[in-house]
Image (cartoon, rainbow, N blue to C red; front, side, top):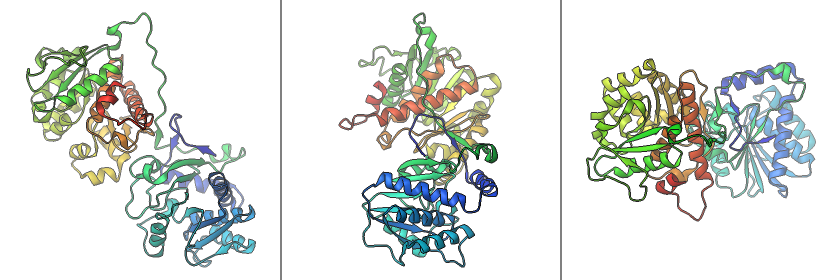
Length: 486
């Protein structure tokens, strides 16, 4: 069993691949083996999480997830605990495996009840798992609501009931688990959208043994978890030119702070030189808190020799410069108002799509609303299919896309999509997106020359951006300015 923490690269498999793997395993293993292994793994984890728990409510649905719960109750009973099972299935309607698990639990003396216990020390959610096809209703919905009021650990088997395994969306009621034991595969929905709130700490059990590896095989993952980047080595013989020039263009009147945040982040993330071109005119010619930043008129910047971070605080003024920037910049990060301008101008979108043919590299960093504008759909649709939306936008524009939010997704044509496991809600404050754009710009400037390298640079910046928030001192407020300096 593996405790999932940020750092290693781990494959993620969608529902179809998980079902395929389940069917392959069931065909070669003795009957009922997978369910028994799942129940035993759940019971062991339950004991590890709450070793002193005596009274355990095991809420079981009518399908195989419920069967896993029945097996877990059986094992806990054998271990001297007092599980109470509420089961929504019947012998007549249950799957073959679930019916067998019910019979085993009943014979062993496991207690069954028609209503949830008034008190418990631990709850195991075995209602739906990956088997949900529609929002929970009736008695199941009542039990989900009841579980969410408990002030005890909640362990979800495979997936919190109500969570979509592929998207992380919650079309109806969803269990808020403190721990989730994912079986057979890790699912993308555990790590993006509402998944990060619903799952708590994720654990993984493959249900394999040594004899299984050559028989089961491994289906292709639909995405991977973003791994921790390797430490960047700055050689003694290098100089500022080795780490590139970055021009930050944005900061329309009244919004100069966004451009300054991006520029400071670019500088602190290692760029050789950072230039600032403000759209608001000449009211600011320097940054007293960061004198290393060099302020220039936008028309004087040699964009074809620079990495450009464009759009932070750009307002509507950025649109007048985007044609030149899209045509000239060799490496480009487009954020905020630059994205909104492209969404409203077909000619600018055409210039963006033409960049790959000129070997120009581009990274887009939309939040869900900006992504929705670019794709011409609603924000709700983006959030209900985050992985697919990021991939669709990357294919449409021919570049790397970082779809920000809970479990940020990095997608690029020809590259496996990546879901980021770092970051938390402390990043939900103005300016942190500008900081991320600057960090990506700094990494692009340090010798990135291919689309694959641009994809990798974006993944690394996203990981480190989130990691800073995860490691932030609890007694200090996280502000974008402090994050840029960090």
